[in-house]
Length: 93
Image (cartoon, rainbow, N blue to C red; front, top):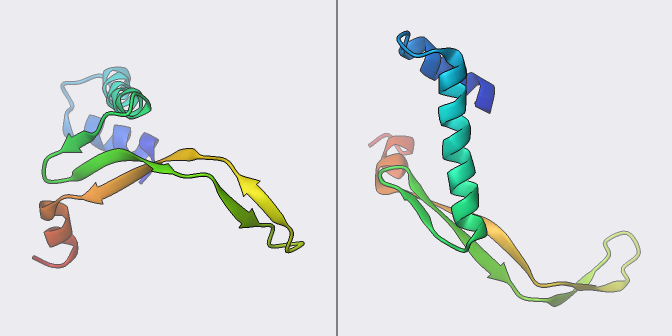
């Protein structure tokens, strides 16, 4: 499902809301999650999962095309851990 499909589904299920308002709500939620993560905070949506940021240390990598060693800088990457409810639903529970 992509963002526009999510917005359409919410708008269809809530006919009392204008589509532009649903779009604004969805975009605000995503922006808040992104802002919190960029500040290093963890975002937990109970039953769904938790978004956090993990630090990857600098390392020596390898260029797969040439086999040459290259230095890879330290970086921060998003991490998602599923919640129990989501895990159970995915596994038929």
